[in-house]
Image (cartoon, rainbow over all chains, first blue to last red; front, side, top):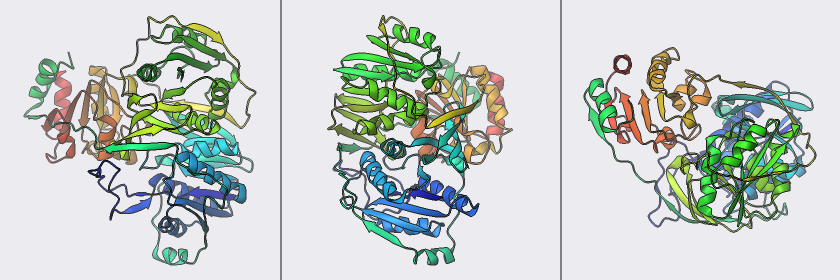
Amino acid sequence: MKILVTAKRVVDYNVNIRVLADQSGVDLNNVKMSVNPFDEIAIEEAVRLKEAGKAEEVVVVSVGATQCQEQLRTALALGADRGILVETDEDMQPLAIAKVLKAVIDKESPKLVITGKQAIDGDNSQTGQMLAALAGLSQATFASEIELEEDSATVTREIDGGLETISVTLPAVVTTDLRLNEPRYASLPNIMKAKKKPIDVMSPADLGVDVAPRVKTLKVEPPAGRAAGIKVESVEELVDKLRNEAKVIS
Amino acid sequence: MSLLVVAEHDQNTIKVPTRVAVAAAQAIGGEIHLLVAGEGCQGAIDAAAQIEGVSKVLAVDHANYGHALAEEMSALIVSLAEGYTHILTATTTSGKNYMPRVAALLDVAQISDIMAVESADTFQRPIYAGNAIATVQSSDAVKVLTVRGTAFDPVSAEGGSASIEVREGPATAGLSSWVREDVVVLERPELTAASIIVSGGRGMQNGENFAMLESVADKLGAALGASRAAVDAGFVPNDMQVGQTGKIVAPDLYIAVGISGAIQHLAGMKDSKVIVAINKDEDAPIFQVADYGLVADLFKAVPELDGQL
């Protein structure tokens, strides 16, 4: 079975986000970029399924500027077999990315698609679900466990209040939650090997997809600040303040 | 304008985040309809008709909707979508699951997790874990929105008198099936509904030590939360996680114990009315947002706090 995974290029999770003074967005100059951490979990899961003999090939896709090649190389170093870059300088929104991925799966016919549950830049949490809808596939979002069979998958999902287990018919789209696995680090030999793995480059137009943005960002601002309060000296003082000043406990 | 809000419910009652979504619909303005789809959900349908500001309840009671599977819910909502300018639901794991499918099937964008309404097509939403707030404008004919559970005051559960219209959904998609649910039996309020939350972080050192917080939480009638660090370390289950990748909460009182205050945690709780931080590191970033900070060893301070409540 072939598994398709995604690798979105995002600002590294350790970077402190700075909003630009002209309110046009956040500062991306000289900022460390990485694979979206939830996509990294998706890549890891696919590679583990391959190592367990349940999949033959792991194909990784990235959609965006030419620099996304770096994230594809990272994914290849983690164990993916080949990469596809759908190259565009357009502001790619989830619906457009889902349409591009739909066109890719029409060509590749994977039996399972694994994506991150959200990207840590836009925090939209849409692409996997939209892809599943456009392709007419079943979906299992926020997965913390995947059991793969020949024609179905049993997936445990993180939901409000606990866990839900569902069974989906393959092909299906699964999106990853934090506890699905802990991604490995790429070893130096694997990083070297990854340089020789193939990456196909194509454009949204090659795939016949209209990627015009539907949503316009009018401005981006820093969040309203919250002033620090006071330090109390003792538990007694704390309880007194909560009872008599803030009046939040009785 | 007509707006369709999709309700989240347990077949008997409507959950609070749905009333927050109705409040967001009111801020947009127009006639508000509430869809209740479930199985054996007459109780929820009746409750929905009482909600303030709702003029009509669309009631769909069928085996296809008992577990709110994304394929079924999205097909149903799309079949009912005609005539609505806005389709909204709460940003819960359920809404996040089916709503993007609805948007894709309608060939429109979804605007996730709105926290303010500027006009019928312009909304504010958090990006980068709440480190930036984007004001975005949709050019689509139908606006598909999910609403942040802490962003609007919920409308009243009572006082409405909506008509109830029984509707039917399309044939089942048959793509997925529900197997089981392992819901943590809560003896305490749910995190997103609690007015007081006691949360523990990596400083708790292990899962057993959370018993100290449980005791405090029980005395306060509080929910129990945790930071991602505590979840990642395996101290507590993921559904207790407060933060960008967990639950977004805004209780009246949030007590952070042994939590350093990573950006991703602050993103989930900094709208709380009163924040208390107990941490032995006086430079911990949590103190920058805390109304009351106590620099102390939590293993001494928490039992002491417990004793004084």
